[in-house]
Image (tube, rainbow, N blue to C red; front, side):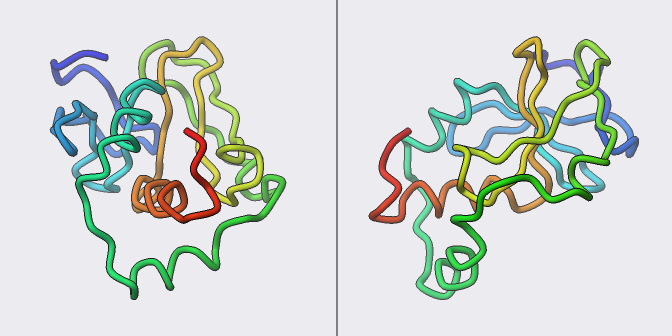
Length: 132
């Protein structure tokens, strides 16, 4: 990951900005609020558990999780890796979370649409989903 403004949003919004999220560096699109980060940084955020989720937030997110497969509209989206420019396929985070994210096939990073990082954190902190 780079800290300079050289990475472009996968949604063609413009350049990504470096930010800290729970003490971890992520790249954020100021327009669409999508996030670019590495697997290691995602796992570090999950392990940190700094944010405290309200019962309302959990009740809103958890029913959306636990689904297998990838919806057709997600498969049809064309998103290129900000680092290598190659197509990033959509996949279901942890196979059956129901949270669809994009991954560079060369392991440059992950693209999470607005709100998906929160969904992953809430999903991972749910009592039945403890594996990182």
